[in-house]
Amino acid sequence: DLIGLSVVNMERHEFGRVVRVMPTGANDVLVVAGGNGNKGETLIPFIAGVIRQVDLAAEVIRVDWGKDY
Image 1: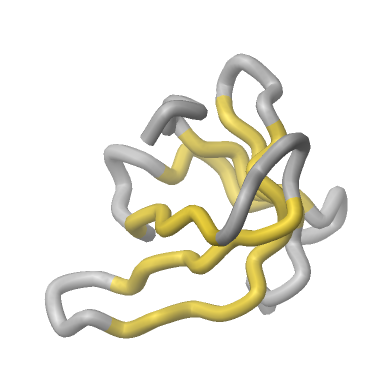
Image 2 (image 1 turned 90 degrees about the horizontal axis):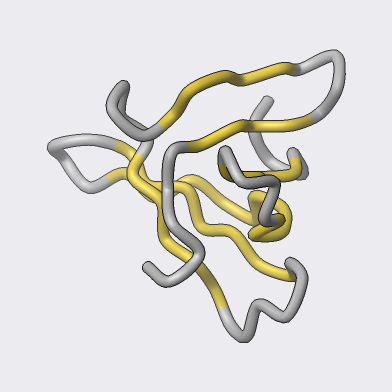
């Protein structure tokens, strides 16, 4: 359900869209590509301290993650 969702942070910086979910053993990691000025991929841990909201209806995941990570 997460593949294709847009990922934005609290400052409304768009990281792109989820292209895959990578299991790591400890937690899953979102692999995000194609955002505003985003070169390559951004890896965002799928953990409670980072993921603020998953809105399937709006097709967006809101994260507490800086654009410089």
